[in-house]
Each structure stands twice: as structure tokens, then as C-alpha cells.
Length: 530
Image 1 (tube, helix red, strand yellow):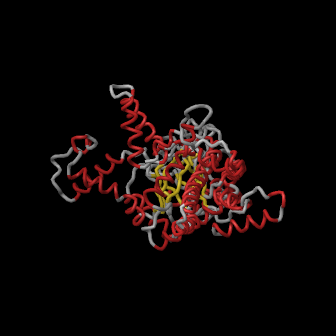
Image 2 (cartoon, rainbow, N blue to C red):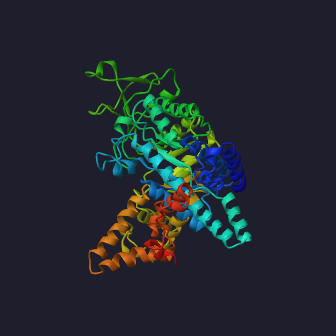
Image 3 (cartoon, rainbow, N blue to C red):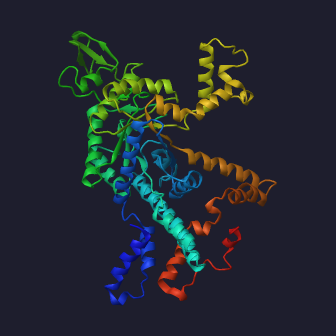
């Protein structure tokens, strides 16, 4: 509906109630436009459609890959979307990522925790809701500024400008974008996963990422000690998430099936199998076993049969079973195919380094079974990108027979190599990594899990060094406020960003001339008008 049609709609409602004569139809229309989404389910349905459309666009042309940055507070997510709209004019193809790692590290009542599913599980859907609260406020703020500009145009008698602004209002693009939300390994059994998924979706999440680790042994994907579950256990949780989506009427909701098998050498269970070659048998086929004879059995041993032979799986004192070394990629491929065949929409393969050849090799094998398989990929800060790519260039040049006498592969992170030909080529490969991986490795969505964790630390370090040092107050003014002004950062007017002007508008709607407004002559935010 257009701005004018919403005014007419409100007028008709008000006219039917004589006692509502003090209600202004245009103010009602404005408030309705500023609160487009009535619930988290409205948001989930809207953003699921966006993701589905983006996936179809990627299938037509992998140049249309999507991106996101992880965030741990609603304000951070809001500022990302405001910045994206400011710099690029649209939020198209840009999402938010909600990292379980950052919730554990920054949002738990226990204080900072490792990424091991020890934090309060309800803190994750609470963050989804918080993010969308801030994104909706960004819509209200931006539209509120347009409404004020419209009033100025009408007051000045400039109807051409008024029509231009009305067009901008009618075509306003929301800051509300898809959030890919991390549910870890489901925080319990399939029923627990279903109940938590419902909370995610009711808060607005259209896309839930779940991993194939054992829930109570969960580890960060880039740490050691990961333990996976048999496929049927994982599929039960994928189904649980799908049931949650469908129960709540978000039929287009998306599930990202993450496999940690590349770096996981352990399993807690021997899979149930009915016949040779079924999924349980294939899972067990990766176990590290040795053939035994009946007379060689020790006390309390667990045995399986394989190809008619009696086998002893390697069992650790932790009661975990070990996979054969070198089977990680094969297990990843099988995980991915089975997940897509059983309800997942997208894949996540957690790798130990950002290497297009490695990722692309696995995706090609997956696509032999599922031609349109697509990945969400973690461009992780756990990788040393500079060192990894300098080593990749070194290895490529070595294979080409190029002269590498000026480089020491073990020391390529050194500042001494900055500005060299090798470092420059490595940086160019980093710059094009997402585009190249989208084309060559089936990556639909690129994300950085923990960017604002690191940017907050870096910017705080720089400010503390300056402010508490010789620069004093100039450390803040020169390093922060002056940069906000020069770069047009919305938060330089922090009262406006926190909703003060929206509140003034409402006061005027409610009290008319009697409204006591904050944005008068003596408001110091007026110092930033220029």
C-alpha cells in the first residue's frame, strides 16, 4: 500500500468512531509504516522469501552470492545495515549472522565461555529478537526523517519535492534482512532441538544452522576434540527443525546442515545398521578397526562385523570411538549428501583453512549426487588469512619453478614481506576469495563469524592508548568523533539514533501543542546539524 492509501485507510477507521476525532490519520499511517512487521513470524516469512529468491538467483549465476557479518548485539546489527544502505544503497544480498561462539563469549550470565554449548540456550533466540528490534527501529528512524522532510516540503509549498519524498516513502527498503542463526548441535535431544527452534523462529529467524556434533560434547569447529553423531541422529534434529518451521507456518524456512567431520576424528556411538551398505553401515565403515579372532577377545570389548570379519573398533578411555585417519573428506561428502536428501537446504563444511581447491573438490563430489548443492562458508577469524594465502602463493610459485630464494615459507607472516610481489598476490587472492569461491566451490553465502568481536577489541585498544596517553581528549575527538562527522556516521547524533526524535514525533501526535519535546534549540545534537 502507498503512503496516501494508508492515510485513507486510517481516515475511514477514524470516521467510524466519533470519539476518535483527536486522532490524526496521517500520524496513524506513519506509525503503521514505521512498524511494518507485527511479529517475529512476519519477519521469518518475509526474510525466508528473500533467501529463497537469492538462492534461485545464485543458481542462475554464482556471481550473485550473498554475504553477512556476525554480531553479538542488536546495535551492532543495526549499524551494519545502516552502513550498508549508506554505502551501497540497498541491503540486497547482505544478511546478518548470529554466532553461538559470540553468544557464549559475550552474552552468557556465566561470563565469557568457550564455544561448547554451555551458555543459556534461550540467550540465542533472545539475541535474534534483539537484533530485529534494533533493525525495526532503524526503519522507524529512517522513515521518521523522511516524514519530517515531507512536512518541511509541504510547509515550503514545494509540492515537487513533496512528491519525490512520498515516492521514497512508498519505496522504502527495510533494514530487516535474513539472519542465519546458530543453534549449535541442538542443545540436547531432538525434542530439545525442536523446542529451541520454535523460539528461534518466533523471534524472527528464517534460517537455522545446526551441526552434526554430539550436543553434550560440543566444541568450536576450529578446535580439537570434536565428536560427531551417526547420520540418523543428525537427521532427526534436521526433521525437528523442519517440523518447527512448518508448525509455525514458515514453510519456506531454511536449514543449514553443518558437518564438522573434516576435523572430527571421534564418534560417541556405533551406528545402527540393518543391512550392508545402508547409511549406518557406511558410517561404521570409517571406524578405525582391527580384525580379531574369537579367542583374542579381551574383557568388555565391543566388536562389529565388516565384510564377514570380526572387527574391534578402536575405543578410547573416554569411551569414544576413533575414525581412520584421512577419512575426513569422505565423511564430509557423505554427511552433506545425506543431509540434503533428508530435508536440509544448505550446507556448511567447517574447514581448517580457506582453500578453494579443497572446498571445491568436496563440492564437486557432492554435486554428483545433488547438482544444486550450495554452501554457507565461514570466512573465519580463526584462520590466519595472511599466512595461509602467502603460503598458498609460495607453494604455487614453487610448483611453477619460480625463484623463491628471497622468501622463507616458515616466516611469511613477517612484516618484512609486506609489499613484496608474493604478499601482493596473496592479498589479491584474499580480495577475490569470495567471488572465486562462489564460482568454483559452490559457496552461496559467505560470512565472518566474529568480526565485531575483533573490531571492538581493536578500536578500544586504539582509543585507550590515545586517551589515557599524551593525546588525552584529542585521542577521542580526533580518532572517533571527528571521524564520525567526516564519514557521516549516523551515531554522531546519538540521541537521534537512540530514538529521541521518534519520541518527539509521538509526543506531538499524542499531546499536540502541549508536547514537551527534547529536540529544541538547546539540544546539543544541533551542533552536528552541519
